[in-house]
Amino acid sequence: MFKEELRLHRSFVGSIGSGFFPVMIFFLSVVLAVTFSRFKGVDVPTVLLMLHAGSVLYGLGVGALGRIGEQVMTRRLGRMNVLLALPSLQPISFSRVMAIFFLKDAMFYILYAIVPIVGGIAVGAPFANASLTSVGLLGLTLFLAFMIGMSLSFLASTVSTRSRAVSLAGLLAVLGLVALVWPLKILTAGQILPPLGFWTDKNPWFLLISAILAFLLSAAAVLLTKERFESPIRMYESALLPTESRFSFSGPLKTLVAKEWLELRRSGALGAVVGGFLGPLLAIYMLAWIFRSGIGVPIEFNGIFYGGMVGFLGVMVYSWLTNIETNEFMNVQPVTPDQVIRAKLVLYFLLTAVISCSYVVVIGVLNGQLDLVPLSLLVAAATTVYVAGVTARLTGLWTNTMLFDVRVLAKFGGAIIPPLVLVAIVSFLIRSNPLLAWMSLLTESGVLLAISWFISRGMVVRWKREMFSPTGPTVKTMSRRSD
Image (cartoon, rainbow, N blue to C red; front, side, top):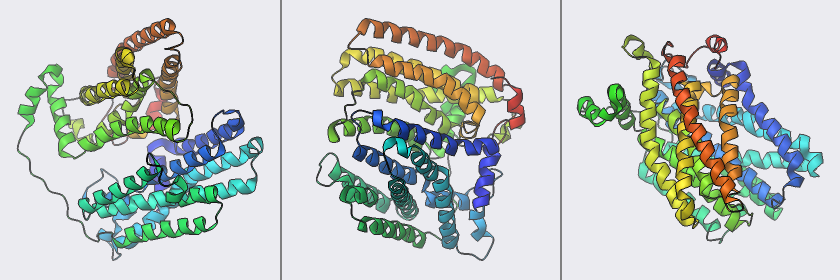
């Protein structure tokens, strides 16, 4: 299974691309460790909290194995066939295969992210006045925090395949525990997160408690794994023509837009798409609020900053829209990839417009900055259109795989990061030098919208003659193109 995971990564992004992420994490950790002493207002307890909370969230993100197992056993995943499907062909229990799959994922992602983080901190430890013993203990507690998050996510996904009500009750219980820390402040973070408790209370028993907790959660998930799954069957009435009339404003694309909308609804991915966009936006605001009010770190972001983040996080929505289904069957249809991309962009703007506007307005109300709402909306619109255009131009219908390619990711970062950094910097000048800030943001928004128009024309040229394939253009084809 470990070899299978490596082969899958390499088949998507090549050997260089598959190794790029851990290398990037390693060097980023080195830089942060070396420059830690220059950060004012950020102390060691805050850094420990951020590292352990991040490890838990990372584990939660990769641990939804119950749902993955259900999909593998009940749906065809294009041309892929993985070892997780062995119980459908061989005399081995699904729970045993899931246990092995869980261990494989834990090993892979620990080596892929946790080890590079700890290695980078170890290299920069002398500059941060930290001993290698402390770094080793930090690696152990980060590992335990990751395993708790992964085991909890594994259990939650397994329970959800049996009872959504029980799964929801478990989620509410976890959120209740978090609320006891923030905003109620009845418990401390170390009391609900034992690996962090080792550092706050200096009690080695927290390490044993963490290991036992991770083991019990994962064991419960394996024991609750279903051995047999029923393939989902749903019947729908024909609705393409009525839906097509609702999207008549998109002109020649109305049929494709209607098709994309029906697929989004019938696949059950609409909630995930909206949640994948709104969730990070709320998380950014909540993190800023927690560090400002709960920890005392002076972070003051205004609505203009959040408007810029709206555009950047829109990548997640577009990524979801390109990941709903395989498009190979369209090779025999009278359509081209650029037409499908444009249809997905129409749906993308329809889905994000209401959420983006509501988010920016609510931020303005909560921060008492209603005077900044019009400019924030303009920044949000400009960055949303620009980021969507760049993403479609560089990745087409294969965002989830092509963004792992080093060359594509470098071009994406070079195009996206500078304007967003400029928005963030100028947003801090809005009160001290309002004239300069307004002129800068108005100019930048206009430039981004103008560039987006040229990008849209280039996108048609870039993808019109490509074939619909499982993972996008081959590496050889990509290297011949100058994007």
